[in-house]
Amino acid sequence: MLSKNQLGFFYMFISVCAFSLMDVLVKWSEAYPVGQVLFFRGFCGIIPLLFLIPKDRFSDFYKTSRPYLHFKRCLAGLIALVSIFIALRNLPLATVVSITFAAPVFTTIFSIFLLNEKVGLYRWLAVIVGFVGIIVITEPGFSSLNFYYIYPIIFCLGLSYVAIAIRKLSTTEPVWLISFFFSFSIAVLGLFSLFHGWVMPNITDLFLLSMVGILGGLANLWLSQSYKYSEVSLVTPLKYLALVFAIIFGYFIWSEVPTIKTLLGALLVIISSFIIFKREMTLKKRLAASRHE
Figure (cartoon, rainbow, N blue to C red):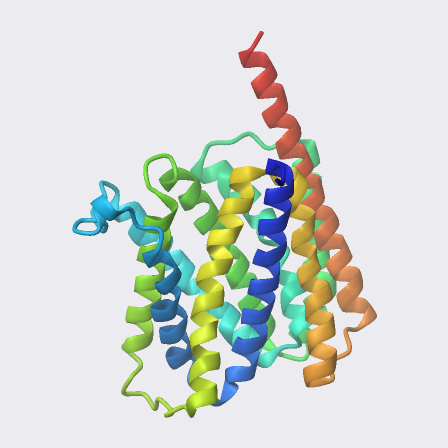
């Protein structure tokens, strides 16, 4: 039998693998309109959730007492998802993944205004280091007017608000309901693009497009399970395996070789994230200790 920490470690690993494979499929799907890929991400992402809905909730599983917060979470998530889809199609895989690691930096900033959290010197230092990392990665892109670099940054902004919203929603809502509303909203948004040039996929492509949704749905659920069984500080470093996968997939599939600039910027962003996570864990331990005194 695996311990709780080992289970958390396992769930985080397979979550990172699933997200990485989904990124590869999104980048591969450039022959299909973004809206069509979004539809498959949302519609097929609902499939894993159907197995989690309690039997006594099937008739009214969609009911919630916090519809407005769900709406804001879905809107921010949609903005983030569309942005990352566009970025993956137009930038090297490793570059996109490197910039997305900066999401905790923006979450820290949002937490000041949305959760009234106090941010100390260490986390402000992490924010500065993270922004320097982003500048190092994107500077040549901005200077040559490659505005596609802005999309992974928009993704980070959207994902940061999503993290705050989920933190609020999870106090009253089950994980499967939060995920269902998001997947449903993705499918609806994608369906609206039906009359804007959808391409009929062959059997192989239909399977691969469906896997975008299934992998995305499973990855989110496995990520939640990881945080349920293990401490965030223990499993979070595994997230950075995504950069290793991105470099490997990018090289062998698209012949992409990450530049020293990208790797240096990624290192700064990862250091920034580590500072934030370590500081959050330290503060939580202090708070827990004070409650037991």
